[in-house]
Image (cartoon, rainbow, N blue to C red):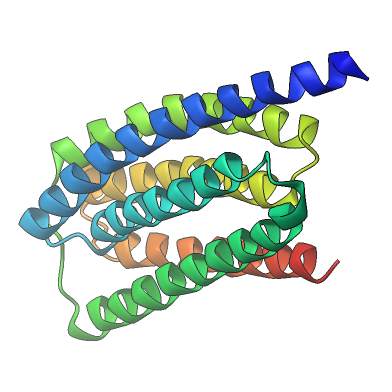
Length: 204
């Protein structure tokens, strides 16, 4: 019994460190992506930056959950609140990207090439899976559905990185301007699927 009680604080500390790393990386990633996306007129790149800021909010919610882990009486309530917050954040992302992608297709506005965006997406494609995997291990060990959902949000950033990279490269290489908003729609699809999974966990 003592070994379990000793292990839990260690797991919580590991989760805190991982979420602080995620918080720092996504803050920088979000600022760079939004600035580069606005400069290039890239819907997918701006959406990627907003997802990074949403991931910052999700990390803050996860930090709140971890800091309240010692309080067994309120742990379940914090779990439910954290899941609800992450689900709402996913909905906000999907709504924004769907609106901007539709507007880009309607106005037929081509984005400029963005080397910064391509490099950023490639780096995130390497970093995000490592963070997501490590956070998921901690979440499962703590038996926390909220932290599992937050680790899925980090993994979702990997999918966004791949989608973004494909859209930016296709636009730069062959001039397929529509690949950018199309990538945005794929992003919306995955966001909607994640929302469904998060709220299904919330209802259990």
